[in-house]
Length: 295
Image 1 (cartoon, rainbow, N blue to C red):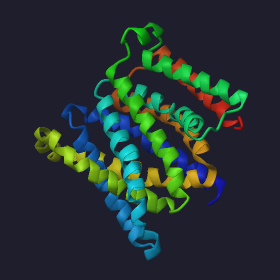
Image 2: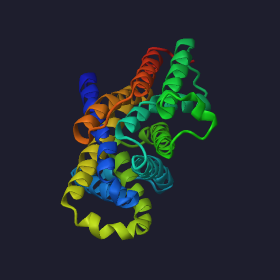
Image 3: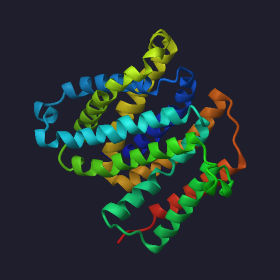
Image 4: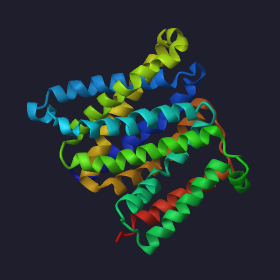
């Protein structure tokens, strides 16, 4: 796969992902994050199953010893990442959630530092610190005193936890991608994540009749499942194989750009100076981090 095709797929995937908080806000009145996440990944798993069924039998087989690895990917990249963001956007704006997602590359760098002892260069360390500062500006809305007074909103904490889950999914996925193709990894991670989600749908049982009777909700879950999850996750892992987890996750800094535009157009959300300033710091930090080596 050519580098330009990889880059194009990542850009389109970022457009898809920017719609997650927007659709989450549109579905927030149901207060059914488990049911929405499960519906989304039922669509994703079905779509991926149709694709993988056309592959050779060897591409569909996995070793039993690797099943826990796929459940771990399903837990981080499917369950926690999606349920937490759907919970988060019940309490915060979609544009703010999308800007927080830009910090995922910073979290990947931190995980590399902590788990793999991959130390960024001096320029990379400066970029990491600038990006962390930008994330703090966004989650506190420019009020640094909020850090010491429980002033950070519940929504921001939930979205930060969602971003951290995706960072874990990115880093852990490298091990599995060394053995299996991106399609195989994404399919089984989606399947395992869906199986983990299904029992929790009972928590949202009061909202199920109205949610299942809403045609627009079904369309949004189908979009999130087939395009956002199935294609988006597949293209992301293809990029991880082609250019690495750090470079791939750096493209996520496009998510807030698309997300702010979509939130303004579809939700009428207003942006604040702190949101722009924090987003600029995050992107500047990623710019430095991308161009810095590691040792």
